Length: 390
Image (cartoon, rainbow, N blue to C red; front, side):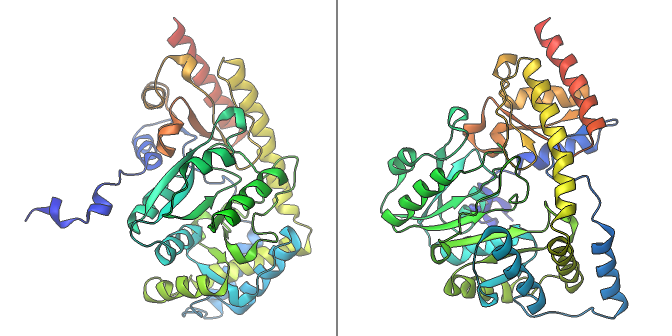
């Protein structure tokens, strides 16, 4: 059998994730410090774990409503309203198996073959492949360090055609750590209105901003925005696979239809854990998130300063938990830099090109690991840099 022809071209033509590639290499080496995967090093708080244990002990081992438990959706509604001034009803929400499933459902529900989707570049690795899996056409909107890695209206206008249907707004951004201010959001909303575009706002890092409050793109723009978020980053719940989408009823209904035939529902134990996570944070004025953010900020400042001292220009991230230094002074490509650093000094970072061609000349370093590990990684990168200069 010709397996090359058997595999769908929309899948065959998409390369494997550049993030997982370096993660897999690192897993085969000893004494590796991994700064490659965006996963909090904090253990899920005990009260959240206890809620899941209680659920199991009570025999809650069955399906929930496809949309998610009413209680969880009510809490999400309250959370979005109190925290971000975003107003969606519980019938405008869908609980998913991680934010990744929400993204997949969104593209499959909205993208027709040939539709064009605007995506900032560099950006998270899943957007372009997910659009291609839906037989759409991803259109990269270049962003630049000098502009704070924010999409500019003039760049977007150049790329809009009669086939443009959606715009992905993923801020705080992975891999750059860029955020949007009020003026940026206003300008992008004007673009959406002018060209009748629908927006997918991926705000999974909404709670991880430094020295500023996150402004949701959906605020006052609910009828034209699908808001995607989840529990992985802010609540240290990556393995629980719990996310959600909130948006106009027709869009959520279309996503729900796919969800019903494929994933059915998120696990009830994860949903009970999510309920506890929201209740606890809202009742305690988000103290656990604040403590975690304080730790991230110390790591962020140290890593940015250290990389700059080595001679690598480094944009100061305003959100998420990544730095995106410019490594062109090394004389190496992004792929060469990360490969040699990993194989010789056992530090795993991700080439900027994993996030699109516009990421060449940069690498992504996650500081979602202990400060002790970051200090050792910095020492090794410094040694590597000195060897390059010798």
